[in-house]
Image (tube, rainbow, N blue to C red; front, side, top):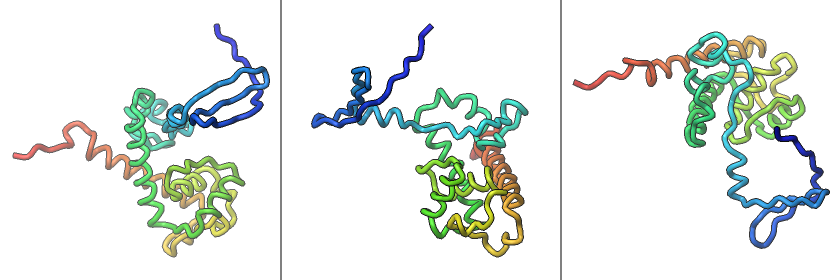
Length: 192
């Protein structure tokens, strides 16, 4: 059985050859290229740890909004396939949130998320970040304007918790409709 070895990082340097060198206090040196960095920064799972596809048999996960087969096969997907799944979810989230609110300051949103320790993927649209805030900390936000966003008049009467619940329900419905249209057996009709 392999045993973990903890080392203390003493320095980082990039040489004229473009290679990145990590120097550890115990004289161990690790060298890698920028291509290695790109590999290490691969697409992360959107899982938030409440998978309803595996525990309840839902077609669309209530947590991450992936389809059951995507959850099961995620680790076997190429990076491009993972990115395509995230883009689909991102488009659905943006479609729903842009109908209900506006972001007027991305820096304020980012700062607020960091202060509340709400995770967000900087590669995704800021509306996805706002979705994370509403999903994870709706009761800790006194005024959405402090986070660089505001609700549109048709939704201003809702509490952020009510808004979050409505967004989640719409997102599940839209995801399920997408599944039925593109993935369900017999959903694709052939031309005569």
